[in-house]
Length: 297
Image 1 (cartoon, rainbow, N blue to C red):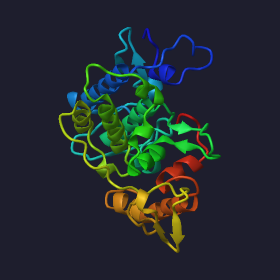
Image 2: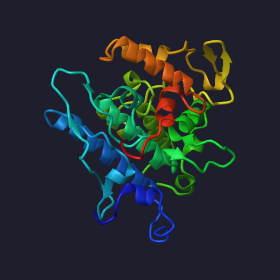
Image 3: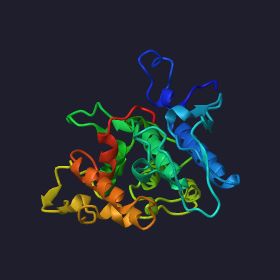
Image 4: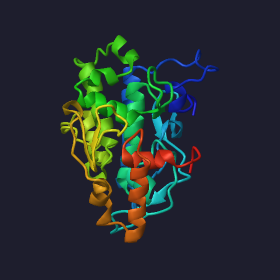
């Protein structure tokens, strides 16, 4: 494609930085909507539906008019009629993988929705999915944790790429409000709990303003956050980042034990591993981060 891939424009290397212009708000909006429509077609426009499994910036190509096309179907899987999910070997690029898929190989259309949410946040925030260059912090920063914390603190504007706030959009009387809506949809799509993510069709309707974005559901915050206080096996957080109190392993049992094909002993070992490796990030994500993994599985 004549304009390369989305990643080239969001995070240009020092070699091509001069030739690449920062994406404008209308361009970012158009790209997000194009990707959402492409995924909606894959999930619902063909039978059986297709799960892409590797939605990320480098797999979104831009044509001469900066219209986005979802590409690279090398990891795509077809859904099976009558089944709520596929249990399959994990494949894709970490930082973009949905937790239930990364940990248990449970693949659904909402696995793609999670990856889409991460890409939306990258586009709107101007940060990589995993940011290793965060000033003032020695730890790597997951964009999903960072953006969610800002939203729960009532600071969604601070999540926006600074370049978006310097310009205006004459075709929209409230461009900042629309930008903030896109951030909220990205966070909702990348929610840690699969049941609380929208379908891609509902996400598209939210982005287009046809339906309201619901209140962002609470989720466990990163365990490395300074507001976390541990008391035995109970975890609590500050009111600013208020969320549910969890008993050890509740999150995994709540969402997976009822439908998981894993033997009970296997599920238990996964839960134990998850909780032992929690130091910097949310416990479901941390298990994925703590394993030595190549960039692409």
